Length: 131
Image: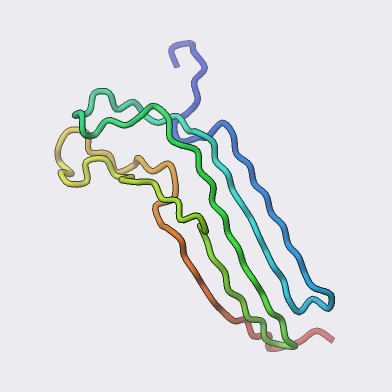
């Protein structure tokens, strides 16, 4: 930008992804874990917004942890898990949501998760089992 290198907004310079799976002998149980860590991100300039709609130049860093457990039988598999275990949520991802036609309104200011911790359960049924 103007001959200067600049980080694009909403792109963290540092990211780490870790994943691990453990299966018990016989593979009846499976435990999955993955974690995403996102470093600080440059945010768009909000200096010209009204004072209540100004934001810092950088986001905070955050981590998202997901866990899942599976139990396998012959043709049925049960699973359950939790996403966003730490329940991290970005506060107020829409700037000026109270007055969408006023100066400073910006619906595209999301830099992190907007949904909190979620649990799920399910089942898979295999019609044909391999020989």
